[in-house]
Image (cartoon, rainbow, N blue to C red; front, side, top):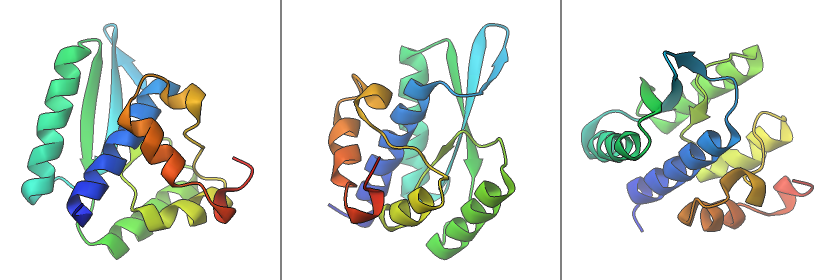
Length: 139
């Protein structure tokens, strides 16, 4: 699988997990808005827009807003660290590179995608369990 494909898969898993957790999202006129941060450019951005459009058609009570982030992984990582360290309440869902998971988990900035969080999310369950290892022990 290509790196872009893996990122999209992980992004989709985190989107599904974030939606399943139903955290402090903004609600307007009976419609919940979830802010998803990630790449919004090129082929990856196009695929993401199609996936989000499809998701919102299936879930008309949910609105997903993409918060664009830098395309360069090191810049996106730095932005996430700044947001998380500051305790920012937005965005709700982060598109992560798989190598950031242990660092963000050790800092207590991300939660496990266990069976409760992604129940019924299909591929997300397999993706979530693939990230288990010594750095995420205790999740």
